[in-house]
Length: 185
Image 1 (tube, helix red, strand yellow):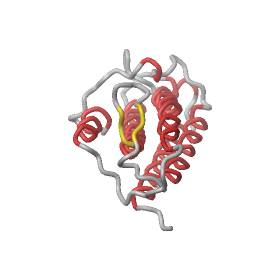
Image 2 (image 1 turned 135 degrees about the vertical axis):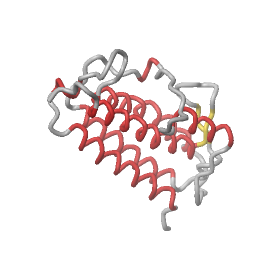
Image 3 (image 1 turned 60 degrees about the vertical axis):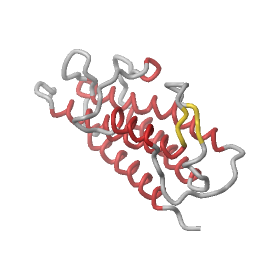
């Protein structure tokens, strides 16, 4: 059976995130990886670690919701009004996005090891595998409990969109940190 366009799109987005992360981190010293552009601002390494931790919490929650569900592939991901508002307001990188503090369980440490890139690449491999697996299910009907906001139950499709767009948001943040005035050379 041919893969739905949304699975190919999300896999390509995770591939692009891998490439962007490698471009951002390759050749950085530990000092550069951990340099913060200002008080409370995250370093390149902290942005990557935040994404790793988020994926390590979010992906299993999505994956476990598929267990025992009937095979019934969705041809596209459809976001409902609440999901669309949440993604556009808090996840999608744009000037209109709200800046909310990260939940405590996914705040990066003060110092990040250079191995964060390998960890990020592994988490994206897990994301691609989950997208391939989820492609067999109706991702617009199966819901999972949001591990950060337990009262919210998103569809699997919304969850996968959130993971991809969240990466794009924080990779742009890492890129801005690297281009900031004062970045050590």
